[in-house]
Image 1 (tube, rainbow, N blue to C red):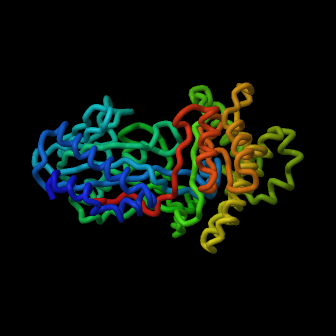
Image 2: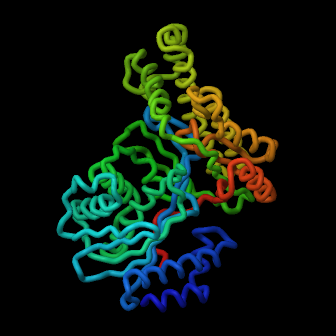
Image 3: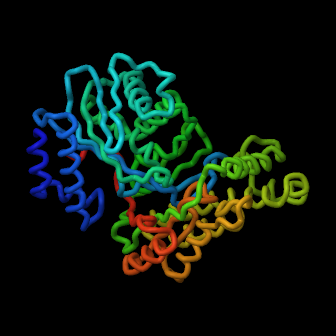
Length: 426
């Protein structure tokens, strides 16, 4: 369908069922308006509406359990969320890919010039070139297209806006030129390759794998190059809970040493036991040597090692609860993960700035509003930034108001777990 037919179909509700699947029931009109506006902006920028038009979507993601474990080859439970980056797309015959994102300049590459460009490092154009290059290297077809993208995944929120963009581009090339043949693991690895080799950031694979897989996903990073991946088919939208992510503020600029210390202390304990990472050391071996470890490395290193082992157990228990349709049991593990991060991993605030404890304050507010209902914990790297909560629907408005009264308007995002990864929506 051409661009105008696409808009009309969306406005007439022809894709409401798919929008309900992606964004949750009751959000169909808001989703439709967003796609229509993106189509209008495609026309305003590129100046044409004839041709075969498509719409694609790739979600953000959240960590659910397994805080600060992946770098020591541990286990993580993560999930895709119902905010995303969408793209209105049409093939062209120019030999160029042009991607215009709302609020940003256009990224443009030639499909026969796919070597890394040093001057592009750290810029979005390098992601576009890298994704296209890797798809071609793997023997898939690449071709030219125009795309207008719109994202409501907040940058810097720990919800992986950059990985969503990478996966969207891969999904577009898979959908337009390869009959959707690129599977989710390949799509994630393509995205990681683009970020590592072209963008110049040595990221891991978890963000891209979560987004590419969709729903809740359990990862086991024992083999860091080929992690175990288990998608958990669970209907989060039927639980009567919303997933709330709150930005409690604070800058990450001065926290590099804090993040490095978590990994460094865990690896220090592993080294004391003759191994590279904690996953290679049985928990019992650390317990037997606690007195000697604390004398050499300090108490915090021991506590962080205990957090690592406990989190791996909680990931397994939380995944088992979802498989058994035991959502209350799942929430118990999320709360336990939050307590462990606070008490043992100690990444809720930075010891360098004890007067700045936004995440801890957010946890206090969540406890006050929720009581014994729901679950709450630090989200992601910690020390500043975001916290996570599963909030009963009847308390969502009160919870959101309480958070935003302290942390500011639009600081609390009400989300749900999305059941699928990147897809061709239209």
